Image 1 (spheres, rainbow, N blue to C red):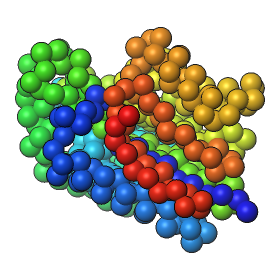
Image 2 (image 1 turned 120 degrees about the vertical axis):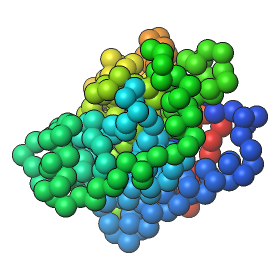
Image 3 (image 1 turned 90 degrees about the horizontal axis):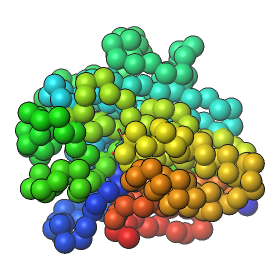
Image 4 (image 1 turned 120 degrees about the horizontal axis):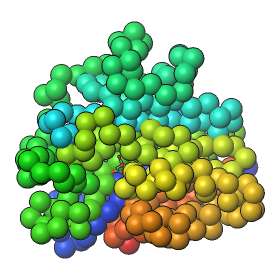
Length: 315
Ligand code: ASP
């Protein structure tokens, strides 16, 4: 029988147990479990991988703990600009949006681009206009306000520093203590079809109109039924330069590596060599999964038809 699997992430980085209260840890673990269950239920009921990854990502986007949708970080202008993408492995269909604001669930908009436009990638006002046309839910700025991320931004807004989500603002070197709060999911359904989805608010105090790896097909997200489905989180600039997600697929397709072997090379060798901190999650067509990161921690989880059901944060 075809094994079905969903794996999710809520960002990677310097996530240390000593910096976490047990209350907060429980909130994170519960949020991950809820998101994972949302996708898994769809797979269990015979739904598709694409529906499952979108459901999991929506659940994470709606949770202020993560830097995507509701919990998105502030840009240099004190606004929110979100990026998201989705890809389906059986036909290589993809949809992506960059630099959108006021969209409740950017992943829904990426999916609408995939299904209902003649394009793959929309940005800025054009993407928001398309959202209105498609009756995608919009929210006022106040919906995206969170005190915690506002404080983060206030600490650096008068500088040229841009911070990775959840940076410790007490930290002497803002770039030293890195956490990335992007969210994503990758799934293999009962029919052996793969899909991946990723969504983010980017980086605190980022230059306005800066675009990271998350919406870039092949860098932050990739799915191909011949190989794997991958969703990344980390320092986006490096993931773009490494073409990280697609490189895993290439290593599998052209070199015959397993998902784990390929991901390990990209995360622990290629990305590390260019200071690309972060990680990724993935599944292959047999429903095998991998969750690999070169940072201290990564919010993550996996659930499959073999009875595996885990959520984790630290190494
Ligand atoms: N990769 C995202 C970006 O660079 C950040 C993250 O993963 O948290 O926009």
